[in-house]
Length: 104
View (cartoon, rainbow, N blue to C red):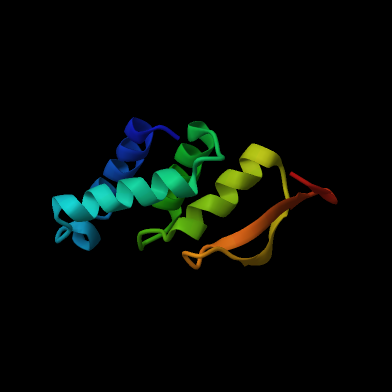
């Protein structure tokens, strides 16, 4: 996703869940935009947007990244699951998306 697309999605979440995001300052917003853009770099914006809209419709509380990543990734790549093979230096999970028995 682009910076602008990510900013737009986080703005939607902030509007939908105002009480949970009311105390975030500009630095926090910038950090969130950078993190979400990094986490969703491999997924088309329309799939992330769909997952966010579904979450807003169905859930009382704001999502963590995984709440959006998994359904967005499935729409992007097809049904599957993330196979964690380790972690990187920042503690982020590394691995691959298993899709119908193939690595993608």
